[in-house]
Amino acid sequence: MKKRRLLSVLSVICLLGAVLAGCGSSGSGSGGAAEPTADASGYVYTGEAPVTKSGGSLKILASTSNYSNVDISNAPIVKRVFEEAGVTPEWQLLDFNSYADAITPMLASGQVDADIVKLPDSDPNQVYLKSGMFVPLDTYFGIMPNFSAWLEAHPAQKAELTAEDGHIYYVPGTYVAHDYQPCLMYNQVWLDQAGVSAPDNLEDFVALLRYYQTHDMNGNGDPNDEIPMSIMNDFLPYMFGPAFGLGLVSGFQAYAQGHVSYAFADAENYRAYLEFLHGLYAEGLLEVEFTSLDRDQVISRIAGDLTGVAFDFSWAMSMMYSNVLPYYDGSEHTAFVGAPPLSGPSRGFYVGRNLLSDMFGVNAASEKIELAVKFLDFAMSDHCQDYYQWGFEGETYTVNADGSRSYTEQALNNDWLQAFGINPAFVFPAQQSVEATDILVAPWHARINGELRQYVRDPWPAIYATTQESDTVNLYLTDLQTNVAENATAFINGTKDLNTDFDAYLSGLESLNLGEVTAIRQKQYDRYRKALGQ
Ligand SMILES: [Ca+2]
Image (cartoon, rainbow, N blue to C red):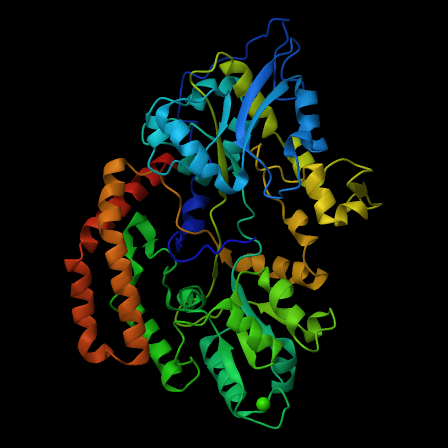
């Protein structure tokens, strides 16, 4: 079910925290917002239900649930949102698994008979919004009180959603972005046997690997069958890059004053990173076939009690790794447990994901633009988000004496909860919640996630590109990334020597047009900073 989202997409802004701290109060940017207007019955929508008192229907073009047995259009949560809004839906739901394939040609031809449309992607190259197919929503902010308040509270996302022309076209759902992100995991039983807690720096970490390498950790009488750590190649940059101050996950990083650079071309820090990994390789702590290790192999090793350290998406912790350990008893004492990041010359961190998920736009050809705009605003209100995340009191959750909430027994059945319409991101701009994720994992896993949240930093922002920028980046970036990956492997396994070959590697990147790609990333980042009001 889960998708791997790795190297290609996300990265790190080392100083994003500082960047965001100074940008709280920029103006809304776009003028001309429509004032609240009355519907045919004289009713004025101000952000709460109903959206209209004169009735009406809206055509919704969106996707089915990813649970094939769930009819999202009949889910109680979805139905209630329309009932409260006073709007009747006319559904046009396309299959979840082929949504992009089905809707992309419709959008390309302009043949869309719907008032509200779920986009096939984030429109990264501004193809749809430049076509004039979608209403610039900022011109309707006067009747979008919930969305405009959300944007003011989320300046980074507002900057990401602001197109090159200064307008905002889409209402987004959101992911859980700082929770359940990729992290280090340790076999707790092995840690206890070694008499240490999870290391938080490279030096202690290497010492632990050496201990595992020379001790019979699994107690089978053979001190040589232990594989100290099992890290899939794509996760090495997540695991060790931050300790060297590098944003290797997307490759592009911005330092103070917004200067953008390519982390894989960092002559000092990236070289130190490679030197460290080569050291692990030379000692046998990073395995010879490290580039081909896959998740199935990691799981198989854990099931055989053969390895002590892994790095993966958080959900693997209790759902794929701990549960296969021969002695796992459901507690963290016998589990593969998440731990803080490793620090080195720089302080460690984990790389989160981008907050923005599915985008919804209003068709500029709609005859009911105002109703559609108001409905979309209501559908993303806190009031509706509460439904999306918790459902209804007494049915999906109960309120405890201290005011906190618990899901009901029935809601702990995930199939039932999906049919109820929890997190209906297929049809509404729903915001994923940590609580709804917590109930899917072991309690100790949820607690550890809460502890690791503080270490997660935002990835490289999602910034709209121009078609020309995309053409140039697409032309050069794949070759660059291939070259980087091949050279990383060669420097780590010693086929190439950092002392004699590293300068040639750096100049090789330049001849692959790194300068042009970085210049584009710089322009895009400048636009992002400008939209942030910097
Ligand atoms: Ca052994």
